[in-house]
Length: 108
Image (tube, rainbow, N blue to C red; front, side, top):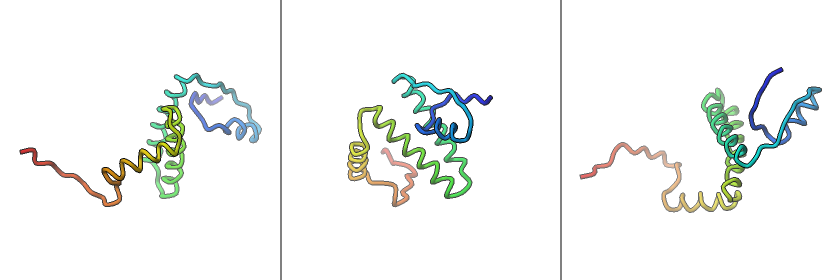
């Protein structure tokens, strides 16, 4: 019996049951949830870096977006608030579209 001990998407137990298998789950406390979201973010980031095709990379980015949404809620914000913060920072400092690579700063 494989042991996973990790946070999974909400419908995974139903997917497992539909395949004819049984699984055990439990609901995490708030502190456990925050910790496991961070663990899952690390896991999905590593999977993104290991992606071997653009499609695989996009699938991992989708997982990262879902985790970012959940982490925003944990930190007291919804997606709209997070987007507003993102837009404000982009307005002030720009995005990453121009591919600017900072080499150094002359600190005189």
